[in-house]
Image (cartoon, rainbow, N blue to C red; front, top):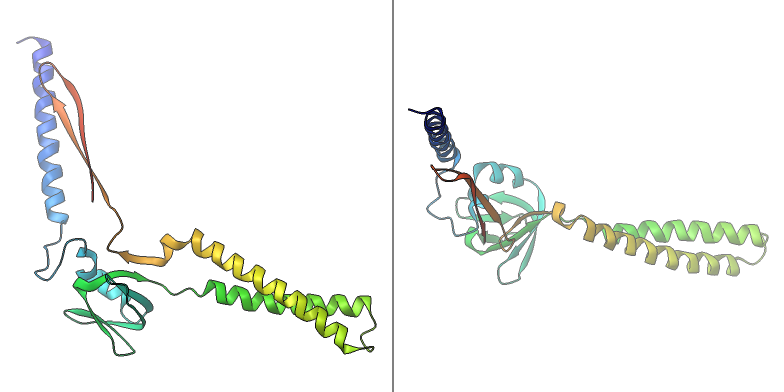
Amino acid sequence: MTRHAVSLRRTMTLSLAIGLIASSIAAAQTPPASPNAGAGNELVWSAAFAQSVTGRHLIITTKDGLRYEGVINVSRTALETSKGAAVPFGQIGRIEKPTYRMRKGAWLGAAAGVAIGMGTACVIWDCSEGPEGILALGAVYGGIGAGAGAAIGAALNHARRNDDILYDYYRRTTTIAVAPIVSPTRKGVAMKVTWR
């Protein structure tokens, strides 16, 4: 045999061995499908996911748009909230953390605005004279602060929306499969990309 043929045979044997080992490892790591699991909901039925949501205050949105909020408990067929709602696994569209960033931002902004407004009024006018002007300026600055705080909260909601979502049935997933190509005429890699 020529040196080139021996090298090609070794490359093909190594590629086949890597492919067999990788496929057996992947098969061993794939959890068995639950009999109740629907397409796209595999995460909801895993024990690790159930443990991560149990006892947490979350918002569940169903596929038809209904929203349930409360402390979550996981049963065999549904997620149950502390307010008595039970959402079957097959109806879950989204699970997310409640953040209340806009509300908190508005309150903090209003408080800071009132403090700045009243402090500014006391510097401009004597604090002992006419509380009406001081209160009016505090109210104006409080309104500006509340609006700014709510806007900052909305921006944070937009920036961190993916971090707040624990599960989304409609989120598109991408799968990439890579396989070596070794033949007497070609060498390379074949890639297959699948979107759901």
